Amino acid sequence: GFKGNTLWDWLHLLVLPVTLAFLPLWMQTRTRESRRWRAVLVVGVFAFAVVAVGGYWLGWAWTGFRGNTLWDWLELLVVPFVLPVVLAYLSTLPAEGDQPQPRDQRRPRVRTERRSLERTVAERSEQ
Image (cartoon, rainbow, N blue to C red; front, side, top):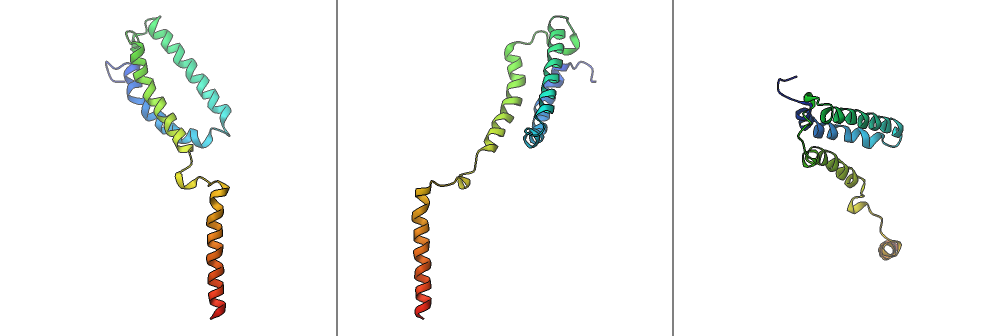
């Protein structure tokens, strides 16, 4: 790697782009590949836990974790994970025009269209 950079620096650089890159793939395959996604999550959490323990308690300097506060962790992880979750949630909401109207709101329009059609047919038959 580059001299002087730690895992912490690389995480700051890569967490958001990697999360945004995987979001569409996760959205498309989350139901049919749920076991694989859970396995990836479990492996990722385990690897993260090992590196965090090594960085804080075992003194692994290459992680760059020592000295970081809870606020630093929130800054690193909240935006890259909360932003895609919010985007995923918003993408599942129906658009304004896609929402079905209640039944009683559709009836007057149907009646009006039927009357208009009946008038048109009556006018043409009179000609």
